[in-house]
View (cartoon, rainbow, N blue to C red):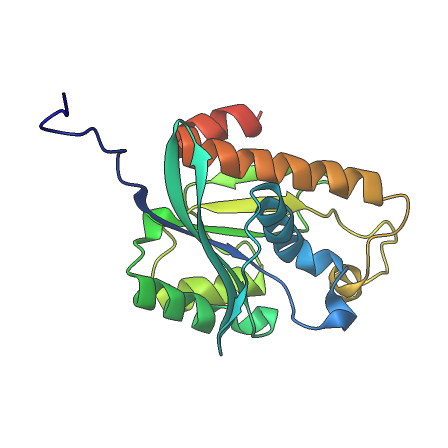
Length: 205
């Protein structure tokens, strides 16, 4: 006997926008400042999200991932502007896709975290990061989650911060940054599957 009402799967959760910060172009592809891009690429590969679309303002991937027992809708984006102008593309994505700040996650490099460490925050200032400063200015709020990936400060006191962030990870640093990127991807999984508070408890210790 055919049932009157069929069970239908629950609809996917509301859209999450996950932005990785960096500078476009092959010159910067492996630089420390592109840790946000690297995180996004690794997380997309983990979840087999490969259908990239190139917009004027960003490279985006849309899809759904299975986390926490449900399908979660995601939009991944890498701004096509340079780091200091990240706010324009992010504001455009937020406007076009109607994403509230609480469902925007920005992944980026952080000089003030030791190499290989990751930290999640619910909100906060730019902390001297020009990409984050641009986003906060364009959105008009600091109230969005962020995922900080530690790149550490230069070992040589005379070495400038700009040269450090635009330089590539060296062979000695590669194992630490690989581990950090894996941890960052785990943190994204936990955030989307279990919630930001659970992820902060697990990954900020």
